[in-house]
Image (cartoon, rainbow, N blue to C red; front, side, top):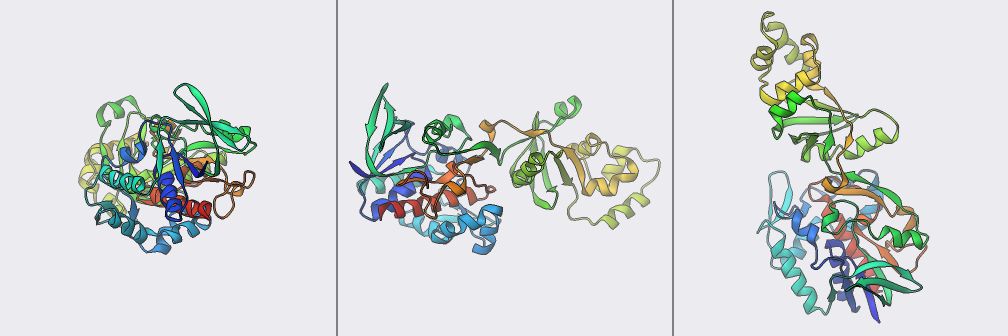
Amino acid sequence: MSDIIIIGGGPAGLMAAEAASQRGASVCVYEAKPTMARKFLMAGKSGLNITHSEPLDRFLSRYGDDAVRLAPFLRAFPPEAITAWMAGLGIGVKTGSSGMVFPQQWKASPLLRAWLRRLDAAGVQFFPNHFWQGFEGEALVFKHGGENILVKADRAIFACGGGSWPRLGSDGGWRKGFEAAGIKLLPFQPSNGALLVDWSAHFVERFHGAPLKGVRFRVGDVSSRGEAVVTKSGLEGSGIYQMSEALRQKMAAGEQPILEIDLLPDSQMARLEKRLEQAGKKESFSNLLRKAFGLRGAKASLVREAGQARGDLPKGLKRLPLTVAGFADMERAISSVGGVPWEALDDNLMVNARPNVYCVGEMVDWDAPTGGYLLSACLAMGLVAGRAAAK
């Protein structure tokens, strides 16, 4: 019998394993895939944004309504502790102009290799290709090699991921076992994902793949300055990911979600109105957008796509309305919300209805934007649960 079993070999699970082993527990990690942390590696292919360097109070505010529940974990393992932990693995960091923190080597693979070596040296055992099936009394049932095996442990920490990127392991397959055990769950919804917009065929043909840079996005009172890319079915990119929660709230309230785009965030309304007055009345609409407002390409075509009239341009350019049809499929989302609700867990992330069973990471219903906030919270939750389970 092992002291602690971790189900899921992603960053939250590996951090739980490290925290528990450091406190003297015997730890085994069971992973459904042949190798550990596949989503972690994929996220790091284009640069592993592991945390953010902004002040902690500002950092915590990024978690919105979930900040109250996440704050104790993030205070226990704040961004500066993450960079110190990386240094202990021999991984330096670099901080971008936006404050986002990356490994010096940029990718996730060097960090993961060093981490796994340290866990192995600490006596943590790994069992790949073990897919969790459910509970059987106090035992855990895993499918391995076509057969079901029973494993017993004093405590279990589940870190099976949410519903995004299912091909990398976060497929929500654990839900059936939790529901069979009487643990009520919330449905998964995509977050930090692409938005669906019903473009005209002409717009898609000309501007599919075109970037939208230097703009501001707004949903109600929530706004974000960033970038996006026009896709065949809508928009995706870091600038709109922060709009996910506000859009979901609109949809949940039965409202038609509208994404507003400020195409000229550095220009005041009065200045735009003056430019319109000074423009020649015989100018074509295209020339007006280009000469008076400096808009070309996809930005100029977006104005037409939104049906803006000449006289409404100043307001339209500052709050260009796009009707959002919904989110793209979960498979394309960076993260998800839903899963185990906060009220089902105690302050150390133990399941109230199942003593000695903990849940960490994206299995739990919380949300955060991209920028290092997702990984930071997963690591912090794993740390706290691992320590608590090892007591």
